[in-house]
Structures are given as structure tokens and as C-alpha cells.
Length: 292
Image (cartoon, rainbow, N blue to C red; front, side, top):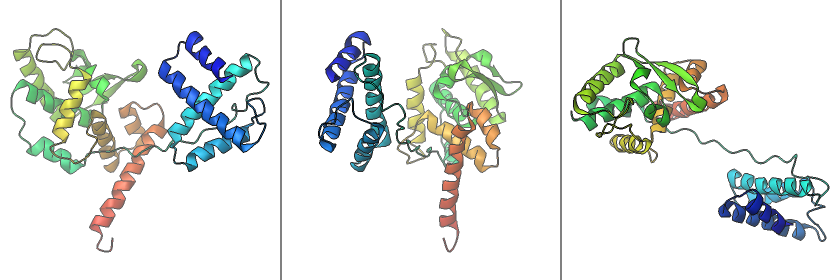
């Protein structure tokens, strides 16, 4: 039955060899488990409790939730196939829930570190330096995703009204206000760009050849500049997005307002930053209180 299923994945579903190998390994490990648990147990007689017991055994061995869920996905796909082909009479995996993944707390750059980077660091006046500082300020003061930043065009920036029109996931647009510091930096960047770069794109951020800046280049800029002020291992544009949200909540911004600024569909997604700020609060208490 496993071989039939893997052939189905390969020839009818056109799945990659890596996926087929992974599914095959998961299925054979599960088969070895239920045959060892009960003599005479088969794919037709397996029930939901056997699947749950197998998942528990994986967790006991140190498997993370993501790995267990990947193995469970293989079992679910197998039983859907077997039920459709009438190889089994029931699908015991249908009602089995996988373990919940633990969401890691978002990493963020401290406000003092961002102040040091933006106010005390020498940036230079060349095009690449002015562009880099503009990118850092924009990510930190507007909370954009990297793709949202690279997707910005000149027409999306209203310097007079101090607002950005941002196109987020699933092409949903939102308006983000910004303050004078970012307005002044954008004006400086745009003026220098128009003086020195021959445009081949309507993009806001251009390479020296006049093309839209690539996401990888933005990542390298952010990683390099954050490395000057923080010891965080992760120094990506998304860390600046986390820093934006954390700073707002630390200064009493409402959760719903932060959700709208970030472009989150669900408030639950934004709520993870409340854990971040409480975690920071505990650290501040331990460091500052004489009895901490």
C-alpha cells in the first residue's frame, strides 16, 4: 500500500522526489510502530488512538512539533488516498490533531540601540549611504515588510501629507503615516537619487544602475548596519518590523492601532508583541529594582 501511494505521488501528483522520500520514511516508521505495538495490526485496523500514541512517542524522543506535524501530514495524505481507492474502509487520521507549534518571541532592537545607530553613527553622503539610512529609518518608523519596501514606487509616497500607500500580502493596501524625520530623510534621498541615478524604474529605491532594489540587497544593508549596534544573531528587515511594533506598544499605543499599521488580518497575530513587551518589562525590573 505504501508503494502504491508513493507511485501515486510520483506519477499522478508529480510531487518532488524529496517529498516522496520524506513521506515514505514517515509511513514506514509509523508502520513499524503499530506492528510492534500490537501483533497483527494493519493499516486497515489502525485507529486514532494508535496514531496519537505514535505522535506521543515521537515527542518523547525529542521531536519538535513541526516535525511531528510533518509526519502526521504524511499519514493523513496516505489515508485519503487509501480511502479513495477503497484500500481501507475508514480514515483514522481524520480527527487527529497535531501538536501546537510554539511561537518564538519576536526579536527586536532596543530603542537605545536604534537611537545610537540613527543619531550617533557616521553614515556618509554618498548615494549608497543616504539610501541605506533611508531604508533603515523607513523600516523602523513604518514597520514595513521587506517586500513592501522594495515594492514602493514614487507615487506611493506623499511627502506633503506624510503618508505611505503600502501594498501588503494578497495585494491589500494600507496607509501608514510618518513623521518629520522620515519625511526629511526621504526628501534628501530622492533629491540625491534624481541627481545621480539614471532611472530605469518607477521604484522608490533604486540600484546605482537605476533598477528596482532587490530584496537580498535590502537584507544585506540591514544586517550590516544593525551589526554595528546590536549583538542579535538575527538582524533582518523583519527584526526592524518587530522593533517598530514593540516600540509602539512600549509607548502605550493601542493593540488595534498597531494591528492596522502592521497590516495584520487578525489581532492574534499582533498580540505576540504584548508577550515581547512583558518579557522586556521583566528584564527591566530585574535590572533596575534594588531587590530584583
